Length: 338
Image (tube, rainbow, N blue to C red; front, side, top):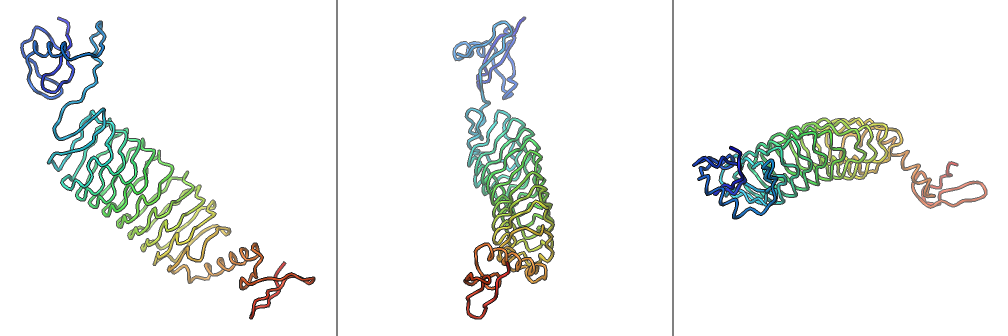
């Protein structure tokens, strides 16, 4: 006997049933239904096309669950009381603010259908400790897990290609964060105030480390910098008090103001000879007192003042005469090098 289309009278899911049966169980919601009524319900309510030859139903549906508000594959909100949340496999997008400030949840399991976690989706879930991510996840948008203070570890699939601004800001329990192979850039403040993060390996393709990316990561001891690194922005590592030494690649050209300010144990800095930095780049670090820093800084000031037509020794006004240039500043008067 060929199967015929029907519709579950409990959850509206499309079914294929044996019309000779009296009772059957819905494979989607596990509720028992009367086959004849399910067939009638389909005939009355279904307006979608289906292939009569193969009896393939093309009706899009979502299993009804009172704990989840889902529309067209987007999980809009959760109202359940379970600490362990298993997201339905009809979900492809976890919408912005879907779980915002939901302090009752401790773990989340995502099906492999989820591809996007939108902005602020899990923000301020203070007791969320563990998340099992979808193996097809592509995007984690801005502030998605901001201030999830109990979140202990993150294991993202390599399918992820985008992590938004401040996505994990204030996740105070994270100790490690393997960056997926698909991520080539990290946005500003992504790990700001992740105070237990101990080490990080950055993607080799990354050219810019954005501002405040690792600001106030108190426990950060080791950073493997990208091979293609060009610029480190302001406050990128400011306040990383456990960082004792850094090795920058030959491509590093610019260290912006306060990039490593208040790294109070940073004593060893290995960087290319032509790397540009500001007097505040290493503010309040032991490296500031080193001979290497003083030598490099004096040379940078010399080159900068010369390029601006200033005295290379004091930065004062320089007058040019028939016998060369001379500083006119009181107390200096130095002849300028050619």
